[in-house]
Image 1: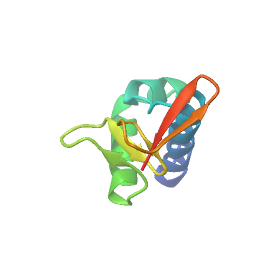
Image 2 (image 1 turned 60 degrees about the vertical axis):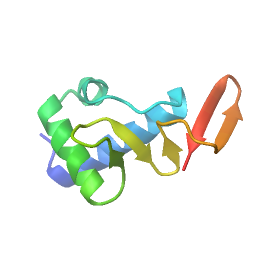
Image 3 (image 1 turned 90 degrees about the vertical axis):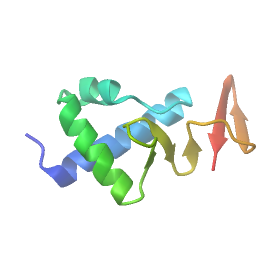
Image 4 (image 1 turned 120 degrees about the vertical axis):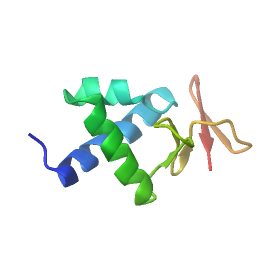
Length: 89
C-alpha cells in the first residue's frame, strides 16, 4: 500500500510523464490503471495536488487543465516537438 505522500508523488510523476509522452493530461482511469490503485484514491490525490497548486482541475471534476508548464487546453503558447504540439501556460 502507498502512503498518501508517496502516492501523490507517484501520481504527479505519471501526470508529467503522460504530458511529455502524449502532449495530453492523463485521466483518473489511466493513472489508476498505471499505478494499480483505485480511481477513488487517484481522485483524492488529484484534489490534494490541486489544493497544493501542483495541478489545476476543471471545475467540479477531476480533469486536469494544467500541470505547470503544460496545459491540456489550447493556448497561444505552443511548442512543437516532432509530431507533438504542447500547449503551455
